[in-house]
Image: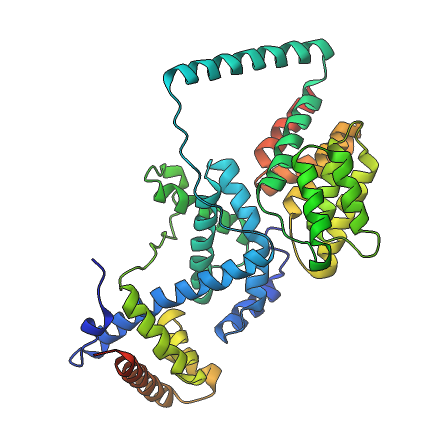
Length: 182
Length: 238
């Protein structure tokens, strides 16, 4: 079960699906694995249940991003996920022994830059945005998929997608400031 | 001090500056959305974020009495194990079985269908109280009219194993049933635990060769039970 029961081909399909916004298989596999990861952190790092839960959650977020960026290759996904979780836990506890460091993957810190009001306004503006704009902006900004790749999946020209992204961002900005109370 | 997006998102930003700003803002928003979404999915499976543990303050006198109690318990344990002179591998298998069995209910286990929530909860409560016979009876009752979930089969296997006397065959049967349910549903729930408990059950049953083969597989896979599996395998050789 090194690769959560996925064959190399199924793994490729799962990543392709994720890039198209279909994440059901990814979620099913990793939600299934979540409790195992909690167990592992509790047993091997003596993490508290709450810490183990939080670390597993943040690891799942980063793992998802790495999959979309093509930085995770098929081989031993389970081991990689667990090592990432363990590294995150040790880093978080500020006593990371060198043996837990992974050379090629750095633990990302959660982003908490903007205040609650900003996030509420952004949520509201986002919900008013059309699905095609949501797909495009999420793909480019959040999933870090290049516009060239997005153009391929959307079956549009690069120029058209670049223009569309600009228009969607303007729309998001307009909605954001429209919702802002004076 | 957190930033305010409406003061940062100015009209005179360059394209790159605006891209960087939106990337950060959307990352914060969508990470929060995913956390919420996955928390909900986990919650539906009975996996909840536990409340932070209370810090236990132990004063010196209480600490000393606690330490004395531990020493007495260890001495009693040593005397009892000496008395029965059980082979090291069986003692280790027992210890690991109890550890895994405890963890199985410490974490919230999902898998109950709505109609049977009460029965399932009762089974789990009885298991937590170490009333394994009654716990098994409750979970068996669930199986009367429908197939069990992986979690239910797994807890039933643990109940059979920790009952006095243990029923190894029934436990192994339930572990196979849990594996079959995973295969049918295309899931891998508790797969590592199922394999590990099977090895412990076979070891305790005296089926040493089969147990050693499974333990070897666990060691080679390098998973979470690899170290314990190696210890147990070594103790079986001694």
